[in-house]
Image (cartoon, rainbow, N blue to C red; front, side, top):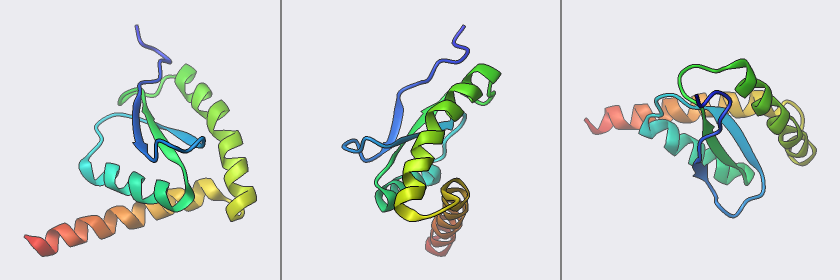
Length: 104
């Protein structure tokens, strides 16, 4: 099976050496747009991994990979980057959906 396998669906700047791995599943176009915006702001890309179910093996690999990336981001931008990125992602998604609603 593909347990613990990381797929190669990258969102964001291809020329950055900083990549955060995030859980996959169904990725809406609004999410991809939000990852691009956040990636551009912080100079990172996102690698969408796995599927809807997060295995223990994949979770461990993601944490092992992401921890040093968050440490680098915290040195550059300040503390609690994981929380900041999650919050900003939610805000960007809300903004994108609101703009879509206004167009319709």
